[in-house]
Length: 104
Image (cartoon, rainbow, N blue to C red):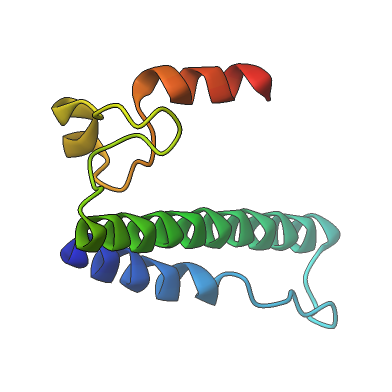
């Protein structure tokens, strides 16, 4: 998970470069400016997603330290190996995740 954290932190540096404000004084066309603004918003959304994932990784590392890693935070049942392998920072089992998504 430490390697994953470093990888995501590197990705955040790259993603943050696209979040700089669009210079409205540049002599570019209206459509180019709109495209640049759209790309900026997409980069901001990407940074937010990476920040959420880093928070989940920090929580997972804390769970490792406390001996609770691999157990769902909601129902406290074990999280399946395949799910943890796909997303080692996942905080919940498949059932609880599905229930959570239904409520949204």
